[in-house]
Image 1 (tube, rainbow, N blue to C red):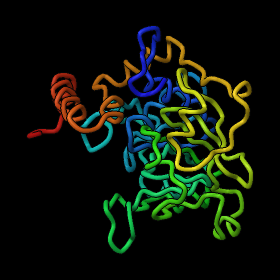
Image 2: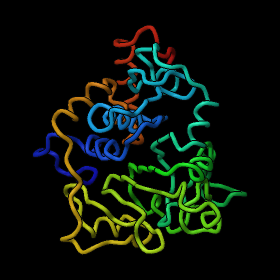
Image 3: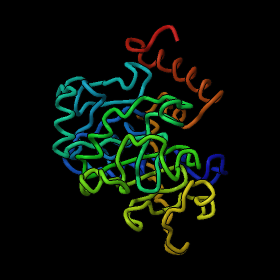
Length: 290
C-alpha cells in the first residue's frame, strides 16, 4: 500500500495501518510519551487493545494516564482529564534511565545500522537544513531496551547509507560497543513496511511488507540494501481491525495524522481544516490568530 496506491478495496488507510503496527510494538509497565500525532495515537491504541499496563503521557511536564487527543493546542496535545498523575521532565528522565520509558521517534535520516539524525542535513559546518537537535535521543539510545522509529516518507533521502549527523547511536560504531545492546535500535515502521535490526551485525532487516508493496519497491526506495529474506518468507503487515480503525478516527477528530503525512500545499489545507475544527470542538483551548 504505497502512498497514492488504490485504496478503494481497503477499509483502512495507510496511516491507520502504520499506527496499528506501531501500537503492537508497545508493552509492559512503562511510560509512553510522544511529540507527534502518530506516536500519541500508537500509545492510545496500544493501551486500549494490546497493552493495558502502559501509562500514557499527554506531553512532557503534563499529565500521566490522561485521556489525550492530538490537537494544535499547547504545541502538542490537549489532556481532557488532568486528574492523572502530574509528571515533570525530571521524572521523565528518571524513567528513561530506569528503562521504564518508550517513545516513537520520527528521524529525518536513519541508516542501515539504526544510527539516526534529527540535527542537521548536510555538512555540520554548513548544513542545508538545521533541524531540532538531538534532544533526548542520546539518553534513549544508551538506556532503553526498546527503541522505536517510524518514517512516513520512505525514500533514499530518509533511509540513507550514512546519516549526516549521528543524533542517536545504532549498531555500527565504537560507542555501541561501549554501551552494549541496551539502547540499540529495535524496530522501524515506514510507509512501505516494517523492519527490525536482526540482519548481519545488527543491520536493518525487512520484517513485513505493507499491502501493495513488493521487495522491488523497498530496494528502489532505500539508500542501502537491507537484509531481505526470499519473497515467500516475507509476511504482509497485519491489517488493523475495524475496532482499531474506528478508535483511531475517534481519537483524532482533527485528522492531524493526515497533516503529519502530507507536505506542501496539502499540509497547509489540512492545517486550515484542523484549526477550524479545533475552534469548534475545543473553543477554550484552541490557539488564536492562526
